Length: 167
Length: 262
Ligand SMILES: Cc1cc2nc3c(=O)[nH]c(=O)nc-3n(C[C@H](O)[C@H](O)[C@H](O)COP(=O)(O)OP(=O)(O)OC[C@H]3O[C@@H](n4cnc5c(N)ncnc54)[C@H](O)[C@@H]3O)c2cc1C
Ligand code: FES
Ligand code: FES
Image 1: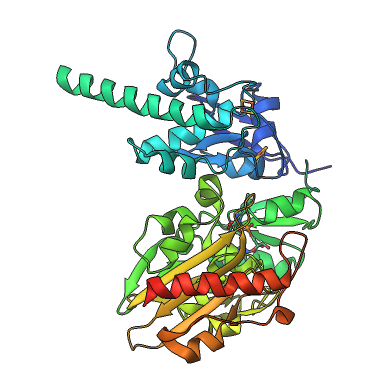
Image 2: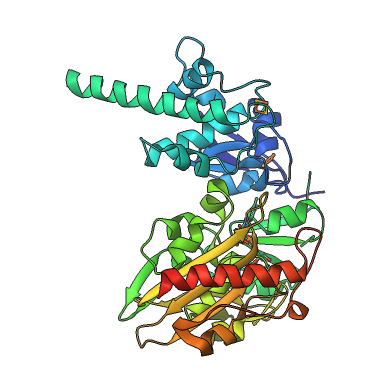
């Protein structure tokens, strides 16, 4: 019998424990044990970034990490970013700037962009392109994706200013 | 893709990891996993056990002691990218993509010794030292002694890379790489360092079967014309870049790096 290990992690604010095999990849844990199918498997060879999620606030490729390695971690997937009626600024940005066509790459694009904006709230076009080097899109040609991230950066800065004015 | 089955052990300390490693010669250390997990998914490696050392506090972080910077083996590429460590911060920024840099570690990269990895050229040019530990003690080797061949280093079975020692200040340093357009690995990457005593060290990665010093450039010094630094017969060729093309790239990358370093 294969070894199973108890793994407890908090995903999108909800803590749960499951018993995967050590070789269960984080992406399969999220999709199959937790039903969070917004995180995609594109290449399965660590190249395309469609499986990107945040572990303790940092973007990682969930196809290149075992679920056991996330023991005790705080994980955020695309489902934890926003919901209809309360979209995240990046989700709105992708919508407004037509930053997606088939949408397969979009969850990963948004998670990587969120990591970028967390340490660089006002990135230049070349900084955005450098930050998205690990995310492949086969549809858009990237142009509108860059605009979507700029749109989100702009609206996040505006709401931060409005917030500061309120305080 | 699933790897073959293995047992997982999260090490509680370096000595715990070394004891586990000594008791199972088939076990492998797990650092950032960004070379090991892809290899295991393709079943090119099937260790029966993984010993996770990635989050051991003893192996993380960057500190300065006198004129030496000491980097813990499990320091991530991202931590180095945002650090002030000479040359290595510049090199780390060019590795893969942000997600690779968030997980991958310098110790894992050096132990793996991929012929196209970026750090080895910088480590050779910086004249860094590498601290290795096993259950029977510790030893320190020079960068020149460490890299021995393709995926081959001075690490013996049961040993673990624990620290990298680099000079805290240098007069000038630069790294230039011609990156593979998909993976970002080096097709040819050249590091040049002008040390505080004025001596010049240079090394190349990606072009040969392992990183090596550019002795012609070193002997010609800062006025080197960077022509014919390496012979194509000493290099690798593949469907992406022939050995002759790589030899040319070495000259081009070297002249760019030299111009910035001097
Ligand atoms: C898409 C992609 C792009 C990449 N692009 C680049 C690039 O442009 N340039 C580049 O240089 N690299 C690149 N890499 C590789 C990346 O830098 C890896 O992080 C690195 O090669 C391995 O480090 P790790 O911490 O992930 O080690 P792991 O994958 O965990 O381990 C690698 C090997 O080293 C052994 N090991 C780990 N730690 C130790 C230790 N302390 N002592 C002894 N042995 C140990 C392991 O057992 C294993 O055999 C890329 C990887 C991917 C997936
Ligand atoms: S599925 Fe993870 S990087 Fe492509
Ligand atoms: S929108 Fe189709 S892959 Fe990016």
